[in-house]
Image: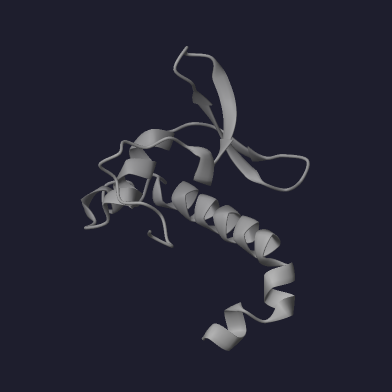
Length: 101
């Protein structure tokens, strides 16, 4: 495993791979909040998934000019902003995303 993640090509493109992963996770979250499956993901044993579903609710989403999926959410002042999934603030009680420190 180490030889794969430390490969120079993997390291050189790690940011792009991470962004792609965040975008895939964003679309998965959109699918999980769909009408036919909405209740089931909220019952999972994954606190981070439940917290993200609560945070995005039914917020609109779109891809920006760089292709990153963003959700339109209010900030602390109730002003709307477009946030990537990895930029959505969650309560400190929610487990950190991988890799955990």
